[in-house]
Structures are given as structure tokens and as C-alpha cells.
Image (cartoon, rainbow, N blue to C red; front, side, top):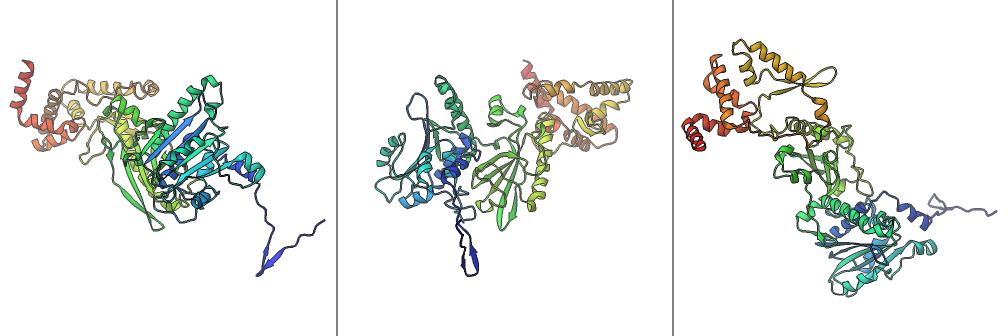
Length: 511
């Protein structure tokens, strides 16, 4: 039995070194939870940090001897020493200071993202200072026998990319081979093209979403020959932006910008389908978390104990974080999860509840209000009431038109009240809830709401309130502040104040 001797230096007892087994460690690092789209997003982080303006993604699997994935960029490239450090596991840890636009986090992304898809990764790079490219390769088969030995020659598929660097002033290529995790290769070879097509579509959708800001600023990302178009989740040309806030944590600013998207009746079918995003309307609600302009989480209510529900799907909130707050937000290795810091949780919940309320109003009222504005309607036809058993909707008897109709003093007042109650009690709610959201007609402007017929209702209702003692101006303001008149306030005012023009226009139309 060998007696172990501990070393003692400056009153500190040093134990024995227990280095990890390289092969076992690397195999474990392959299982962080990457998918093909998220792995490629991590590789693109490195390209964008290197200030690349052109990024090409090649996935070749059908009908070739060496299936592989390649990401080629025209970024600033790396010197031999920089490449050696980049290939080291844990180059820059999470506590290391990073540049303002550095999209890295743990110093593992290049290696773990690549090896999550295949057992061999070659990096070819060239900086402005170099005349020839530098090549380094991790091969899991070699690691199993030779520990942490970094190879200097390209693998088979990577060889064809080396020559292109002769004419490139600078840039980097990451080539992944021995693809043992790719789902599109785990089937009958005859079906590989179909499965590869599905995989490419998933990649396009994910990267168009995650890097939409970079694409909007002029970065070109191609998957095969196709340049990606950005998917901006906020539909800014039609949505309503609520008040922006700036929160503060550890001396850094966090920008929060809420949006309420338009009701689907305000969109064409193609606009509505596109705005749904890669994961659908319900999934893409809540906070969209950005880190240095890169989308981390595409819709979440964070750790605020708020559920995703259909009537909140128009609520999308942009949150911009600096990379200095990664630890406070518990950013994970594959950059897919965050949690609001405890000190900010009340602020985020307050913002979330307000945006959810506004989004629910737009959703529930079927487009009668596109979004909250300064000229809010005072009355809606339908009124929401909470009861002990749930929520119900009733016709608001205080709405100016309903009030005028119910109190005209004619013999039919009681009958009209009963008819309204009958309508309330027989709305086919259960059937409506089973309809697909696009199947329900949410038209904001049915033909019956013509200006001419609205004027008839306005005039009738105004006269009722004038007889009840209101001034003509107060009566008109009361009526035009209610739905649906508030949406047509200007054309209604113009027609009411210039009846001759309306009559002439009506006669012209009739002729």
C-alpha cells in the first residue's frame, strides 16, 4: 500500500490533482440540449462577434460521401494563437469581462455547439496579418486515445474549404463532420433529401428570428443559396407601442418596450400568418429578451407565475440586456433561458399585467379598438362582468345607443329589454370557443356600419339626450366617444356639420 504525502505550502494543504477523463468529459459536453438550429445560432454568435457581414451556412448530406455542416464568414479571423485559445474548452469564463457587443458567454459555444452535431470539428481561419490560413481540429476518436491533442490538418470534408481562403483577406470556416446526431441522416437514404429540407426550413425560421436585428442592419446570412429575411416580432408599422421604460440593475440599464399587436381583422391573411412566428401566436407572447441585439428568448412571462393564454397573444414586450448582466439573469449555456432577477420582478410583473390587459381588450373586442389611444372610448356595447363561477359578457345598458333605445317611452321598451336579455343568454359561446381563431369573422367594418347608417344612429341618440336636458355639444361628445362611433369620429363630424355635402355625395352615388 502506497502512503500518500500531502504538500503543505504557506499553511495551505494541497490535495492531489484529479483531471477529468477527456473522452468522457467531451461526450458529456455534447448533451447540453442543442438542436441543429440552436447549435448554428451559437456558431453565428462567434461570426457576428468577429464583425462578419457575410455568413454562409452549408448543410450537405444527400448523395455525398462526407455529409457535413459548414459555417463560413468574412469576419476578422484569428491568428494561430487566437485560434488555439478559441479551441480550448472554457477559453473565457462567464466572469471574464467582455466587449460591449460580445455574444459569447462561457467560452464553450464553438466547441459544444459543433460537437453536439458531429464527432469532428475543423476550424479554418485567416486574419489580416496572415498570408496562409491556420487550421485546428478536434476529433473525438483522437481525443479518446491521445487526450487533449489538437490536430493541425483538416478532416476530409473540410479540405475543400481550405483553398477558398487563399483569395479571402480574412474570415473563418467551422466544418462539422461525422454527423452522428443529425436526425435527417437517421433514416432510409432515399428519404434524406426530404428530411434535410425540413431541417433547413427549421434553421431558416430560427435564425431569421434570433438574428433579425443584425439582418435589418445589413448583415447577410445565407442558408444554402437563400439569404434570410428578418422576422421582426413586433410588427411595428401596425402595432401600438406603449410607454418605454428603463430599469436599472448593478449600474446598467435595461430597456423595456411594450407592444400591442393589431387584432387579426386589421391584417391580411399573409400578414397574420407571418406575424405568428416560427412557433405560433400563443408561444410568441410575453417578453422577448435580447442580449446585445441577439434574441435569447422569443416570448416568455419569465418567472412571474403568469400563464400563456390565447387572449394575451397580442402582447409582446422587447427587453434589451447588456452582456454584463448575464449572471443576474441566469443566462444558460445554450442561451435559451433567463429568469428575472428578484429585485426587478415586481417591475416586470407590473409591466406584464398592464400590457396583458391592453392586449386582452384588443383581442376580446374583435378589432373595435385597434389598441389603446389617447381618445379612449367611454362605452362599449359589450360589458365584461366577473361572477362567482366565472366571467360573462352583457350588453352595456349605459351605452348611449342602448340607453336611448330602452328609454324612448314607447310601448316596446320592455320588449326590447327582453330581446337584449335573450341575445345575451343565447350567445353560442361554447361553439365559438371551438372555432379556429381565423375561422371567426372578426371584421371591424361590416357593411352595415356605413357612414350613412351610423349618422342615423348618432342623430337618433343625440336627440334623446338633448330631450333629456343635455346641451347639443355634450350630447354629441357623449355619442361620438362610444363604440363604434369613436372609430369614425372625423368623417361623422364632417358629415354632421356639412349635411349638404353628404346629400350631394349620396345623390351622386345614386345616379
